[in-house]
Length: 156
Image 1 (cartoon, rainbow, N blue to C red):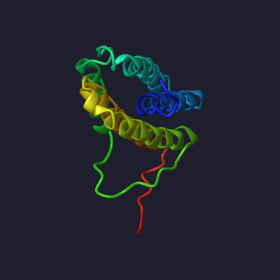
Image 2: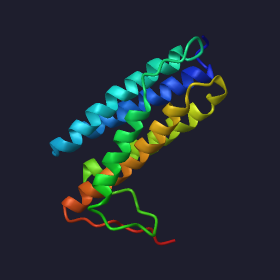
Image 3: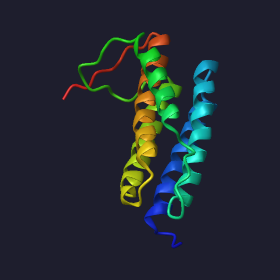
């Protein structure tokens, strides 16, 4: 496989997302968020593996249950936050700012995986990455909220 193969681009983007989540974990003081992100990192490794093997045989290493778990975490965290009606400036305490950054890296990985969809077998992976970016967003908001920093609303 060539270094510029779209599949390797997808794998590389997922690996970069995994590293970004790892950087967030290095700056966390909250054990509960760290446990969530450790689970996420394991799923991202599984997703990288599945992307490498999908051209031969799709491997269901990311399952619908994994997406449902992300959604459950999103719902649990979001219940403690005010609903948003505006765009939020990605900043705050260091771990929250890094979560915002990791979210954008995950979005890029999602775009790379979406580009591979004609290979088939990647629907759950695309959903996982989509929901993961949402989870990282609400976790960033939650960490800021816990530190008494409200959402900083964009004014444009």
